[in-house]
Length: 212
Image (cartoon, rainbow, N blue to C red; front, side):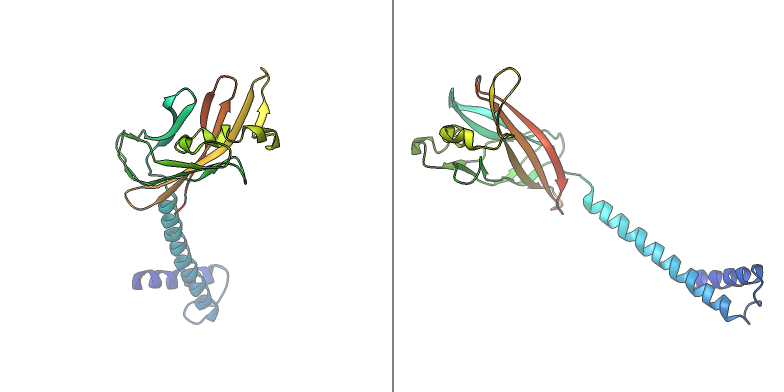
């Protein structure tokens, strides 16, 4: 640090001489220039350090997780599974957020998965609550859709619509969070799209971000 300051002092003197100011050390202007150069150098070093730290915090090092829609034992009974497609990364505290078509509709709540190892698939326990289906279907994810069948036409147009082939769809968001081995948290947003005519489902990842 002493060497750096000395270098700045001499540099300031050279600058002062170049622009026609009295030579160092008789010029207060040179001292001012030295101080400005020193402050600028320190500020830049701190800024670069801060930028590097923020970049490290925001770097995505998490596992590749995906949602799967799988049969539960009947044609119209299904469950959500979480798949870890990473060959070398585990996921911790995997949590699917509560899912519903909207306020007043059946809602699905999911139990936390403490660990989802690399290459593994697991099924979080689900509990669906609502007024338009039998309690025996409380473990059936489909009930957040079919339990609200009479109210589909009340959904926004981007959630209940008919495609160009004349097939009705129900489309709604799903999200999950998880931690990596360093404790960094991630959030994944999906779009769940069911073509009601054939009960065909497509799940698309719409956004992935590092939360902290």
